[in-house]
Length: 296
Image 1 (tube, one colour):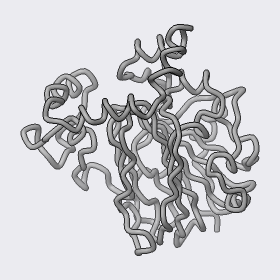
Image 2: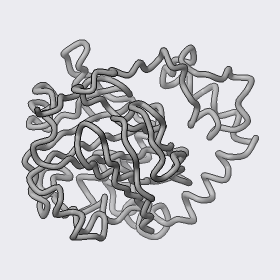
Image 3: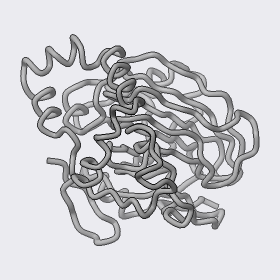
C-alpha cells in the first residue's frame, strides 16, 4: 500500500498500482526475488514486453487500463480510435489546456506528473533513496566532476507510476546539452522495490544531461528507466533554445523516474512538499504546477 499526499485536498490517499500483487510478490518473497534477478531485471524481459506494447496486438489492453485506473481521456489529444498500440496510448500527448504552465519566471514548476520527493542541502555521497538506503550522485551519473557542482543544493525525485502522463518537460527557458546514456538493469521504481534494492537508481538504465536554465542556474536532468520500460525517448534538440514547459522526452510503458539536481542557493521548494518528504510521504503533482520559487 502506497500512501501519498494530495496537495489539492490536503489529505492522504492510497495509490492505485498497476500490477500491485505481482510487485509485492516479486519484491517480498524469496522465489520472487530469484525470478527478479534471473529474468525480470534483465533488458531482454523489458524489450520483449516493450515490443508487444508497440504492436497492434496490445490495443485490447487500452480499454481495461482506462477503466481500472480512471484515466481522464478528455485530456488526450488523440481519441481512443486513433491509437495504434498500447504504447501509443501510454505515451499520449495531452491538450495544452490540460496542463497549464505557470509562466512567472520566479516560479519553479513540476517537470511532469507523478509523486514528488524534495531534499535540500544535499550530501552528494548520501542521497536518500528511502529511509536506510542512500547512494552517491557520482555513482548515479558516473562523473564526479559534474556531481560536485551540486553539492549542498536541491534534489527533486519525481516518480511516474504507469497510470501517470509519461512525458517530461523543461522547467524553464534555456538550452540543454547532449544526453549521456548509461546501460543498466530494469528494477521497478515502486517504493516496494526501493526498500529492497540498495542503490537502485545507480543500477537501472538511466540518461542524464545538463540544462542551462535562464532563471535557476545549471540543472542536472536524470531520467531513470524501470521494469517494462522499453525505451527512454529524448525529443529535444541539444543546444537549441527551449521554452518553459516545452517537452524534453518521454518514457514508453512502465514506471519511471525523473530526477533533477539544482545548485546551492538557486531554488526554494514549497514548504508543504518539504514537510511531507520529511515525513516520508510523496506529494502528488502535475506538469506545470508550482512547486517552488527562485531564490533572488
